[in-house]
Amino acid sequence: MEIKRKNILSLQIDHESDVGVCRRKAVNLASQMGFDEVKSGEVAIMVTELVTNVIKHGGGSGKLVICHYSDDQNHQAIEFWCCDSGEGIRDFRKVLKDGFSEKNSLGIGMGTIRRFSDEMDINPPFASEFRETYFSGHSHFKNCIRTLKYLPNRHWMGTNRKLEIGAASRSKPGESLNGDTYLVTHLGPGLSVAAVIDGLGHGGEAHLASQLAREQIILKSELPVSTLMQHIHNSLQGTRGTTIGLIRIDTNTHRLSFSGIGNIEGFIYSPDGKKTLMSYGGIMGHNMRKPRVFDFDFKPGDSICMYSDGITSRWKIDDIDWTENPQRNAEYLLNQFSRPNDDATILIIRYAL
Image (cartoon, rainbow, N blue to C red; front, side, top):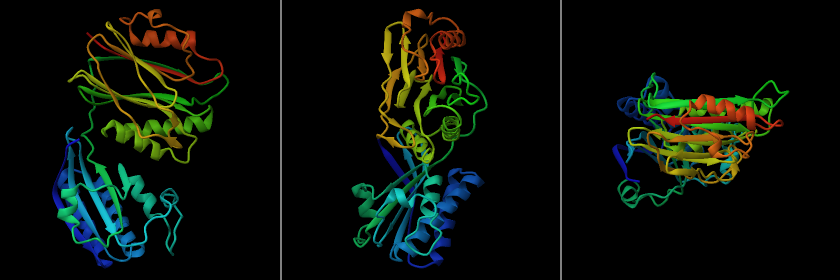
């Protein structure tokens, strides 16, 4: 992936007064990039916590580098590299929990940075040119935190008219709350994101986890698929967890990207045959391998089908007329092949001819 950085600011951190300087510089760049007032406020909080952490816990000396970041798919973000000379973080997972502190502080800083970041890494590798330009002569820096906050796309109020969508979902018989859910959201007239989500187990706890995942996908749907999967995983920590099948459809390029964790089944059906979607084992919010993203052709006449394990796999692809309305097919499969002891959800999206 080709990464470009511009409008790079390199700021020294030595004194408490540097907190305000760094915050103002970061907010100014965020505003120039197009972040709204709310998101610029989140940037201000992130930088305040990063720089304060250097002063209080990072040996009192450090450096903050701020960049306008873009990748080869034109995703725009504000990026921060914050390095210090402290003793480092012994247990990263522990410090992300609010209330943990090794010094006399509230212990909410790292958790706040994590919540407002779309990506966060501890001591990631530096590109050699980037290190030489902005961190040469600073061999005493022992620890670095890199965070990234993506610039949201302008909200699209329309739909993707090239897609026909059908979905059916029900809770486990006897349960009032459904632990499964699904979503389809449109980022533009030719770009859509969809998912099937299965909260672990069933009932209220499963419902809470699946709804939280659904909410995060809608809020962050402009993120690259792998980044979005990581963001969902981070957001679900402390919940029962979920399995997820996530897709991004681009009808401008006739391409589809898929990433899955857990037992969400899926395939693409086309006149040329069936392509199975491969999910990796794990539970979002608990244990997840690095997300893999698989890219496929997705052309007019093709359909994609994803379903939770509340739908049995006893049905055959030839049982369905894939030229039929997807809603009718989804309802038929739910009624005929759902398990009596689990929540069940199926989503079918057809690229109209």
